[in-house]
Amino acid sequence: MTTVACPNYAAIMLCRFFLGMLESAIAPVFTVIVTFWWTCDEQALRNGMWYGCVGIATTVSPLINYALGHIHGNVGFWKAMFLFLGAVTFGWSFVLFVFLPDSPLTITYLSGGEKRIALARLERNKTGTISNKFNKKQFFEALRDYKTYSCALIVLLTGIPSGALGNFTPIVIHDFGFDSFDSLALTYPFGAITAISIFFVGYITHKLRNSRYLLRNICALISIAGLLFAGIYLLALQVATGSLAVSIVSSNVAGRTKKRTVSAAVFVGYSIGTVIRPLIFGASSRPLYYAGFLGSLISLVAVVVVVMIIFTLLYRENKRRDNLYVHQEGSQFVEEDLTDKENKDFRYLL
Image (tube, rainbow, N blue to C red; front, top):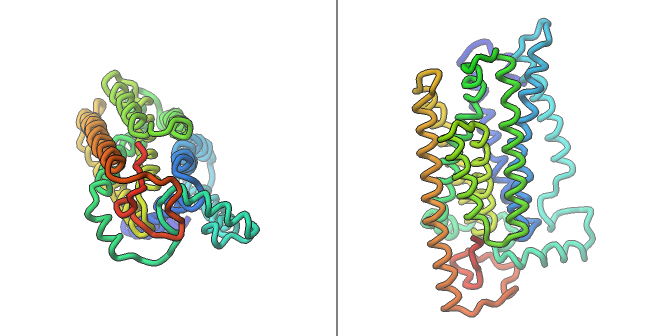
């Protein structure tokens, strides 16, 4: 909301810096909160519910902005956008502050027996205790684990085409001959397809165990087909690949400090993607945007390759553990804070 008071470019950049700094914790925190309440088989769908709100926002926001753009008054069009959306966000923050519990250990409206049931469900995850203590050993294990970098890389790669098209879709549509307001309104199907695809793949993973890597590649391949055959809205499906990468962090990484470290690394990857995506489209000449679409195609092909490599490595690791160790279901308790490497009963979801 304070953006409307900025008198020049420097002030806007300063305001955006603090906005980005404060927003940076949102997605990693939501990822960790999901692990406090749901089992690994349930987490992809739950992560999809909040991650899919990106698509909902992309659906609703153009329509709101389209309406605000037709209001004539003393307040500029762009200022009205920031004031309205900022006020909604600010008000919703108080709702979350009051009603969003930290964990089953601190929630006030569950009885002692209900809390024990919630914690017993988490034992099946084998992902460690609910703790706020920093574990130095787990931190450095996360830095040495290839899964940290693979998840961050996938989110980075999916962020390039999704973000670039999210920001540049109105411009591309405008170059098809539509005016500015119509171009803005025509971006809403992109958000709708994004939300539906994220919710759908989350539901499928809930019903079909070990389908996450397969679905990631299916979404990426459909998006590649969209790029090759001018189906710009099909690119929205690859956002679901990023959603599944986030759910992999919550399900396939054990140890509280390690999970938080990997989650932070994933969204560092996302941030790097946001830096790259305007550069590749900004370097393109209108109206074809050749460099932007080529960069998006390369990113999606790289996603398919990385997903196949990580799937193979995790599949072999599960087989190795099955051959070396007796798998004891439910043998680890939520009070133990073991990483996925330390806990020999841990098996990676595929």
